[in-house]
Length: 549
Image (cartoon, rainbow, N blue to C red; front, top):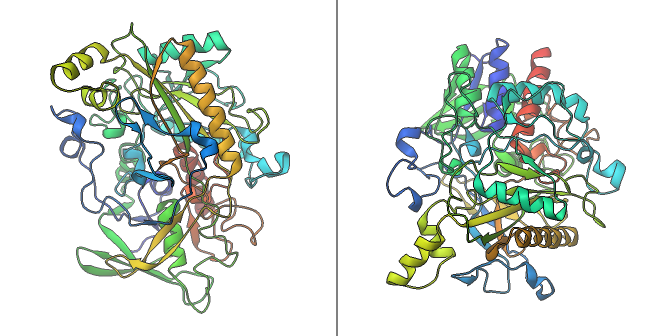
């Protein structure tokens, strides 16, 4: 069977692009390296031991990568160290440490949207013109107005629930669903915010506030990141992939490892080879779309050097792998002694955009946002209280958990991360995967602006918890803990082919039939917005560009 477009990766960008192309009658081959997850089988939220498990990791569901040496910790910023009441300091050495895998991602049908909490954000319009208006970072080669219709398309397909107004993020039509009711911890933060001049509102969420498009409403189990069993969370598998399959134009294959990209003529990719169940397949590629994420996409390009592409496929600018931007995060948690149901409700259900604009933080360029975070950081079950809030052993520990369970509120923050020369992806010179392909190596470095932003985020979070009458029990931040859930920028888009990898339509400046539709094309991170909706809007826009050809 011949296909009009071959797509590598079934995450947010690959799924959205595949759906749009299928909707318009094109035949799409979608190759996914990971598995197809079965919610009722793979997710453990309904089991009695659910709290012992995070998101499942079946074979093939994690991409290979290595980490370069991380930053040394400057004692001048010790106020940013991560700690909890039971363990004490989490990073005990003099070098930034890795929390979990360091880079959180999922390889599978739906990608990291299977694991994400489900925030559904549009970028602040001013964040798209950082360089021209503020002299830092890089501009987007489009305006908010050009992207806005595609935000609408994606929100309506997903069934996003949100408030009537989000300030500068103007809307041409309302959200398809009303906002969710606020959880008990969120209501505490909203009330405390009023006392110190912070303005909070319902967060826009890819979770159904009522039945929509043959999917049930959210049951408020508070465990979105462990995998949604009922299908109300708008992950790519139950939204874009489901719709693409229904069109009859999608050919989806899982467990497929891309082995080779053939581009003998220089400006055109003729075919790709992939391995599935030990069998090597070769398919022609009238158009090839890479949507493998901001780590694996540059790896694929950099590992394909040839006479025509001596620096890697599509890398004449030398920008492939550069401009990596990580998650600049902070969270503070505290106990309020008159609340005992803080484990219920929707994670990240309330948000504060007061400091989100590029000039939103006094004295800095690049903003941040704050959100309710008790459920998102794990305070949904007794084990986390016993390991992070209550110390002691035996009967003393049990009694402490009984008295404290449900009493924690948490405020999270994510801020702008400006690209720097020390943060990038290259190929590991030593380590290779089972296919003998060099692993991608991640280099991370926090710049002075990022550390200053972390100080502001920590100070504001502590002030908010103090206003709520909370006793601090835990703080975690990116200064000493690498825990990147959002990564961006390694194949950024732009008008200048010498300084970018793709154009505004996500098409390679050098390879006529190559497109990239994942977070690697982001020129900037925004002031803490979750990226999935913007990835999907860009992908749908790119699909329309392909169809017009």
